[in-house]
Image (tube, rainbow, N blue to C red; front, side, top):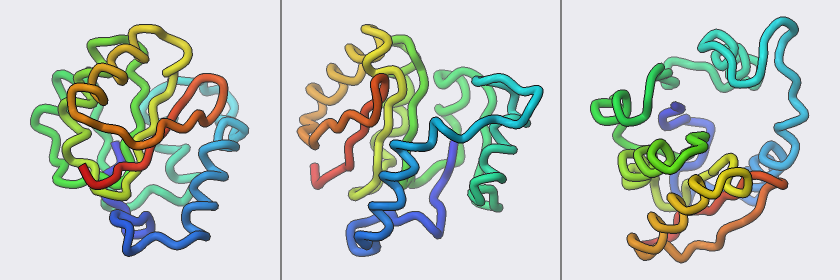
Length: 154
């Protein structure tokens, strides 16, 4: 999980057009970033850490939590999030991540859901959560698998 980054806007007042364009470029082209040789997609914590480092995102505010969402997020040291990226695939893990983390996403922050179009269970968890919490922010398709929305004033 990435906690609040100083270089990433946490509210609308800190967002510039350039910031949004840069962020959108990463969202639409980030899948072209190839992992270091010898690692695999969805690999180890070291793999994830090296990707953060290569993108210049690894600093003392980044905290990695290894384990199932339902076990690690309950007591996670997170107060606020500017970016919530979910890759839970299945209904329970996607629901758990939304229930435990979405309330901490700041207004103007981004929620990204990998595999929304890959797994019916993932899509159902997201749609049910959004509906039950009155989330009407526009759902934007990122690529053939993923969606995102920017949290508005709810």
